[in-house]
Image (cartoon, rainbow, N blue to C red):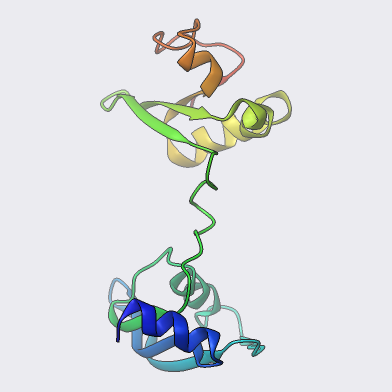
Length: 163
């Protein structure tokens, strides 16, 4: 089926999401196996179950954050960006400064700098702790303007966090 006919079908009340034989494994553990599902426009679907049964994995598959090990997950209609994609006009760049030293620079829009760093650097420190990388967060305006942080890796300051 072509993308145009899928979009038309979604507009006309056909399924907006179709899963056929979807499976997902974490290593040798099959978390989802043989799932078939169609969701129509306006239909409310609820996913319930005990802890560890695969609800979060299913949502990650539906959101495009994971790819099925088996089968196909086919959204229909216009594609919407995933949560991990910045919206149009809100660029985000990650540069590896030194792979061996696990040092990276993250360039964020100026208006999101305080959110990226967090109160007293808590978000930056948490990201560094979770990844094991030293992370230097800079606003895009500073880098574009060739400001002091544009070419100085390894210099600790308020916008940097390390392990």
